Length: 91
Image (tube, rainbow, N blue to C red; front, side):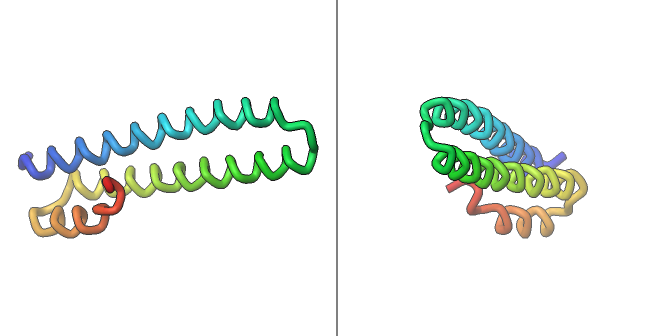
């Protein structure tokens, strides 16, 4: 396996792990905020806000897992395209 391929796989796997940790953190934060919430309307808004953020991260993870599969069978030129596709993930 090329070093570019290995490096890219490790970067994607690391990003997936970071997003999973962020989801866990948001779930804990959500529970704390909901426990503090006194009003039903505010509680519903908080639930929706946290659910949106968590769903966005889960979507990112799904996309990253797809890219990880692409990397495993990619040629050198395809790897360049994948790297360009995912640049924004690591900013």
